[in-house]
Image 1 (cartoon, rainbow, N blue to C red):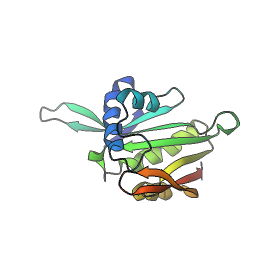
Image 2 (image 1 turned 30 degrees about the vertical axis):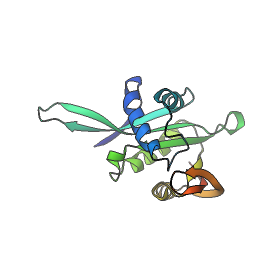
Image 3 (image 1 turned 30 degrees about the horizontal axis):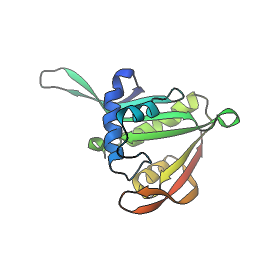
Length: 170
């Protein structure tokens, strides 16, 4: 069973492993695949962000339960001041947990959490267009493509690739 909770300092190593695996492909996030652990954790856990983890609990042969972090996301104001009523977000799922609905659970949770935090809309500033699984997921939760920036992403294998701006009211 997947649970979502606020991230804790003790989660940072597990979050780093997810980030490291996701950015290694050079196909979905703007981060350099060679980014350091410190750099990425400073970014992911920066003070203006509300950071969460998705966990699955497994029972070992001895009967003890172990919580495994299988995904992470953050919410933050998309802009300061008079633009702080829209939130921005970023999500990563461990490649070993793909296909289990973790991304959808985090997305649905984040919509409710963003409302609870007082945001009135959600805007994604940079969704790599070739990341069709993510685009489909975001559209399925009501996000709309409101703009496309041509060749904004240097995809590791496809070369220059478009990036979408996506939006939905909360």
